[in-house]
Image 1 (cartoon, rainbow over the protein chains, first blue to last red):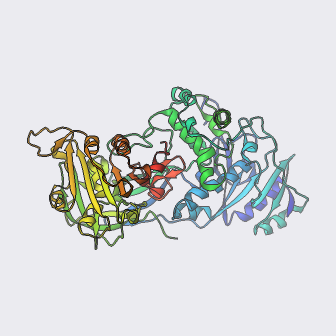
Image 2 (image 1 turned 90 degrees about the horizontal axis):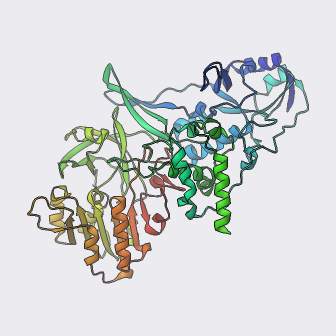
Image 3 (image 1 turned 60 degrees about the horizontal axis):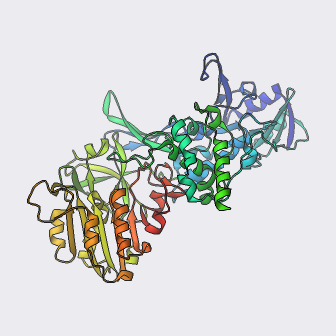
Length: 335
Length: 264
């Protein structure tokens, strides 16, 4: 159903539903950017629509809302362990279509890969409602259209902001709050149909490409900082980490923390053997996962084309360029 | 919603040093394990790691653990009566049904003997259906030889060749040289009816495989077990993924026809 709001009346909707939900949205943090006097846009809790940053792509993705950077799995004491308590409040995430599509990818790994569901992820995920913010033009480095992630139809609300008016399409049992504060309006969601950056995805990737000299460039350039995987909305890898408390060594926690296939140690086993020591190999591994391996397993590509990896790379490595190179080579090899 | 990361306490029934740095821990547990599978072993506040099950029986499992890092250093301090936390078992294990009625050759390098030890023990108990078993094992020095007590008993039923890279004692009764040398000297009678397992360091697997191929073994009859970093054992953490394959889910045992396709 479609509704129209002023900023004020929309904030009243949020106020009403805030009894049962926490809102996460991109927020501008002044002065906290990578360079002096720059801001950073990150996903954080917001209370009103005015706090949401609409003019710039967020540096980090919304995945951290349900896949926290550090998550305690168990608290240990001398006798055993307990699990952390969870909050009952629902979660509403305001995000763009590409990010909305990323949650399905996270679901595949945490819920569908292998015989077990990840209970920590599931308990957060089942509380999530997605409010998609319309993209009119996209941002620098975006290539969602190439990935087919420019559309997202499974939203709980779709939001268009134009000239201080907010129009929404709402599909959910949150309707009473929208009915109460809004005016009924015609609303048909639109999605962007073209990005400046276009990426060709190879159908088949021949194994000869795995050892092709194209990866050497990345061996020389990449500094293994892992920024590309940290900002990626679909990267889910983690490492287990046990700690004990300084003032009581018998008590502690088992946590999981984000890990990155680009960073040293990701494939290193006890005794010191590293299966993927070279940075070019790591780039190949990451790229293939995003546009090939995941698809072989789940039927569609992992990458959602948000372009954040290109936004943040300190060495100006372009993932979209890399994929286009792989595609061109694949056409050569496959004929 | 059950928590797949929950471990349970298993008390240590015995600790048996194999070498200075490899100890065998027998734990009391009702886990149903098959040969080649692994469990996630942990000590709360220290860490968790995947360890292959080296042997198992009614009410117990054994793991032969090398002191090689933060967690295993602490595990090595554990004594009988203490306990470890475990969850699992994980992984596919060896295709024991495929080995029935066949001749099986096991080539193991160093601690690679651990994940196949249960196959040898159960063969000795006559419960595998394997027709004939040959064990080739390579260690760095005589001091690194694992399962000495068992090996002396196994000699009755199976053909065993043990080699060390370097005899620093001067009185090693066995052979010296690489395990590939042992394979080279083998006379494999019935190629079609022979299955091969290779476990050990990546380089040892590769060259042993090539040696078996020279003998006329088909790659579809060769099985390998991969060691990779794993933090979850259940297909979530991503560390063990190679191409589209998760070693913890589809492995750690692979047929060589599949294994050779996997590029780290």
